Length: 201
View: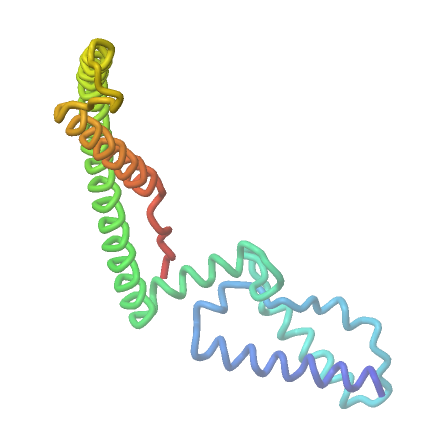
């Protein structure tokens, strides 16, 4: 009974394969995924079943090709069949070119964004160096102004320490510079991050 059930499954497989070859002639150039030698162990007593077996074996042998079997695991033949089918199918070909065009647009958009990001990064780094130089200049002037204040306080009779307007202004400028440099550092850190990856269609 099991032999007959298995034979029925293989017979339907042959029928489906024949139909697929009719609507997709390219499939005829590739092997079927079943090996007819696997049927030699079937135990069939009636002549009708044996005739069916002979027909199934004959069909499977007629579907032999040097190109390999398709739809049998992850093999090269299945990939070759898929690529050849896609190349001759107008609908798939149109979809392929559409997706390819979209992928190229995404790629160009990404590279444009990367170039803009690099350009902005160079500008930020140049600005960072200039602001550091400016900070150094302010620090030097502030140190000179504080020295003058200390010298004045050393000769003054007032108990309250004197701080010149120049010192006040330079201290405010230095605080502002520290904040500016910190802001530039954060912007550089963000620009150093890689853009979002492209997910191919």
